Length: 353
Image (cartoon, rainbow, N blue to C red; front, side, top):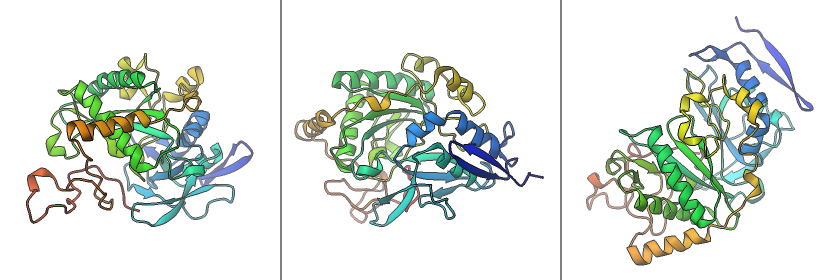
């Protein structure tokens, strides 16, 4: 039987953890308390990844083998010191989301059964202007993590040509994420347009390995560069976030020179604390750089005027955007459904607000 509760001292706060012995990860038997202990061990890293960002929570009240709850609005019963940020969704509705400013807020979220933390790429002070460009390398069937690592090295080359610094991490699932700190000058639409232009450039350099095709039926056995992760209200698991799988993998920040040799299974809640104790946060300097996306917006203009490449489809829960092509997968295209949203079964989606 699970013990009733324990109290953890987190900075100046005391956070109560109920049912600390409840098993959350069935592969090795790690518990809710083990999860809280993990986030305490990587505290500086997870707080840096989440600081001042609106954050969606992936909650698993019965452990990761049970039901997942997508929590956008702050759960009820939060202590007064847990801070929030107000965001608006593509639907026009608003919500107050968790906004981490201290480690105690992370541990309180664990008490509320949160396993994964999915922050916005904006901060509370300018919630409509991203300060982070996200490059998401997503392997399609027939490809894998090794392919993503090879593509990531070309991503690094393109970023260097632009004078931008990329910060790679494993996704904790199948792929690779690369973050670029950007100046918060533009809105979501411009940042997404910049991400699409960047993805198309990588695709041109690796046409047999990379695709920007939004529709799965057109991707083939290639790595998909998911430009739509830069759209409003799209989120990715944070650096150091545990993922909701039985073996408790971690989305792990890595250094460029070690990326070719790492494997996804190297990083779990069982292994990351020792790595963090030895190396600290290998992304500790991520906020020391900031880059303007203006060159990518110029690339986007070039793609449109010189190559005839317009916008690409948005996810299905977004309102129709100006200049967007028909949001219907090509095999279903006809006059009857021209311009109508697809069913959503053929694209990667996130929960509606």
